[in-house]
Image (cartoon, rainbow, N blue to C red; front, side, top):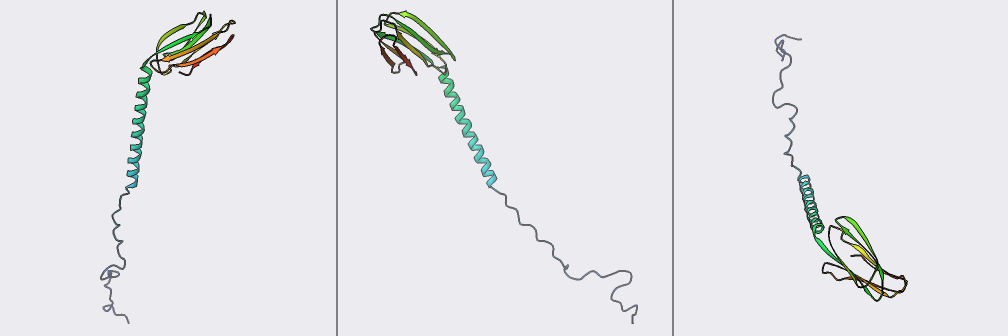
Length: 163
């Protein structure tokens, strides 16, 4: 039977703590987490790409600014056998198109214009009268080769453009 002295548990203490290692093991410490390097590599690549684009944009803006500020000398000329001709010419000056017309003009005829701005083109049109003949228009920008066109006959027109 039960004897009060023979109990393995002391009175009033409850169960004894287990002897030896605990029945469960503590989780092992997590291995040191390696930092991912690809996001940093990707960030560096994107920053390098953005820097390159900014540099190219700066070079482009600089070139356009220099071209816009560069003055140009445009020489219009009309020659031929016609007694009289109507001459119309246009030029971009400082961003605005300036057009002029000289009617009933004797040939040869020349006009020189100084301009600046990004767009420096225009046109020269020599229109012959009812008497006909031949007419040649010529446009020279600075020292570049001239752009020429020739027309002959009554009311024919020589058109020089694309400069």
